[in-house]
Length: 236
Length: 303
Image (cartoon, rainbow over all chains, first blue to last red; front, side, top):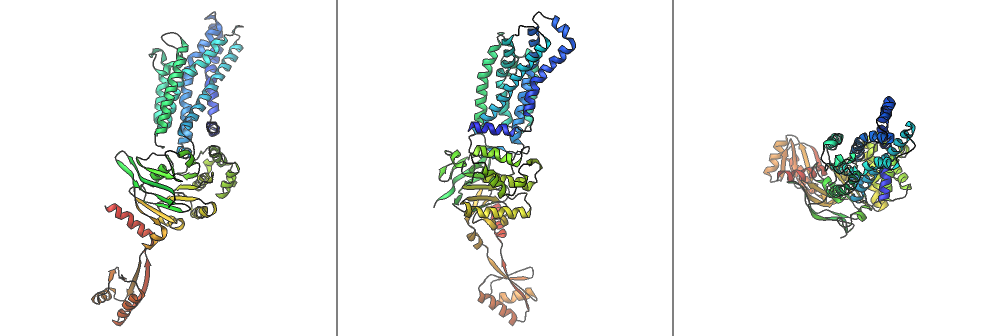
């Protein structure tokens, strides 16, 4: 059943610009560095011995922001597909469990964001090679910088999906989204427990992988909580 | 008796407000059950509970003799539904809309073409629903409700937004369903005239309570016949009848007879003619179901 629901959810995304956004996020992040390196490549290359490391560092400044923005926009998009003519009532009067409907939506979103992460790795690598940053490509760092934020951002995704599916007023998810984006932007000054800080991979232990495990663990908890609440509620 | 749908003590409260109260819905197999009530009487709430979209505050729902809370998915496989305003995905075509539902229902692809043909949308099947008229959208969701060849079809105000020819078309379609496909149909409406022409059973709900539930024939029996009489100098005629001990009423220049046997009517006419009044008209006035409906629901309001 979940396979069929996924097919249906992908079908409903047609002509809605989901794939374009999935592409736009990682492209935007790298495009900013295209501008940056395009304008002052020589200066930037002087900054550090480790050109690749410096370049990856520049990329990761914007990754969390793009990720959180992507989560906010994609979740509200996917909810709007059902909210527009209140198709929830039609969908949930079909012989499906509410739990699998919710799981399908989450899987689609996580899938799109994962594709974004892959694209981010590809774009980062391609532009890095184009810049001729050196023979020694730091593969591990590149993959970490591309995929760690995705896992660290899962709690934000779970929270947003829940808010977007249960609010009758779509102003609420948008407000939370704007606040979340601001929090992500100011993640340096936030305490470690704020989930919007996690995609930046900063923490008191200087150990990015902690954010990944926290993201998966807390993300799972928030997902289960949201799913159970969605199932418990009367359909709009 | 075996009911397709049977609720016991079904109630739903929203905060302090009771939307549905102790509803005992009984729908026999093969009937077109008209579910009537004024706006806000609790029809949609009841239907949402029947489809598992809302959880009852108390009471039980059995569909196909199965408990809805325990066997929701197996029940819903055999139910088609349309709840309130049409739901669809405007950015998809009619075909894609139906395909999205078909995949979940797991019925063969040819059903899409069959139901599109049934509601006559075949020509526009590959156009985006965004550009459809309200009537076309309504027909699309009716098509969607037929996709899985349901044994029970639940339609909430299905003729909303349709033009007269569309209404007749849908009405004819609904009438055919029980005999041709063995479906049982629950159709809700606030318009009695609509139900009157298709339903075989009716339930009337007012303020969340069922105030009448029986066959439509039984309901028609409530439609009393009245004889009205117009004569010269009606008021004098009325008084002369009263003095002769006849059971009559007078209203707006017309005399109404309470006794309605042929003999009584003849006797009254005879006595008036005898007293020199000219009789212009003797008419039979049948109270329409509409009147009964209004009377039933307004009686509830007074309480």
